[in-house]
Image 1 (tube, one colour):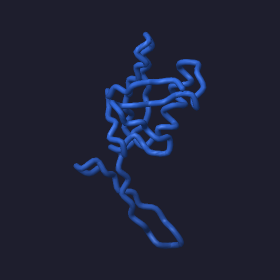
Image 2 (image 1 turned 135 degrees about the vertical axis):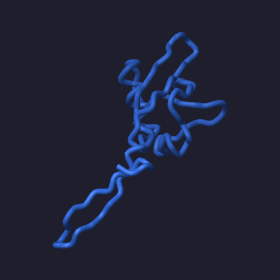
Image 3 (image 1 turned 30 degrees about the vertical axis):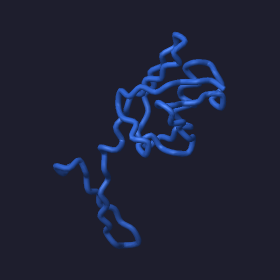
Amino acid sequence: MRADGERSREYRRGGNICNTAVNFQELKMIEVVCNDRLGKKVRVKCNSEDTIGDLKKLIAAQTGTRFDKIVLKKWYTIFKDHVSLGDYEIHDGMNLELYYQ
């Protein structure tokens, strides 16, 4: 493993040896805390490359609500389902607001 967290991997493709670099720091699990301000606080572990839709499905599995009825916000920003957590810069230990529609 190199100092920057990447591990080079060699494999054969069609007789040629190819070198690839796999970044293992991006595969780190993060914990997101969602609070609905009605007494329910949910902690969910997920990857930073998961989408908001994936996070909603994990929250729905813990709370027993349907995932399509969950709305996630931070201040006035409503998070869209197809965008990843890393794109919204959601990091480990971050608090999100949980609403139901």
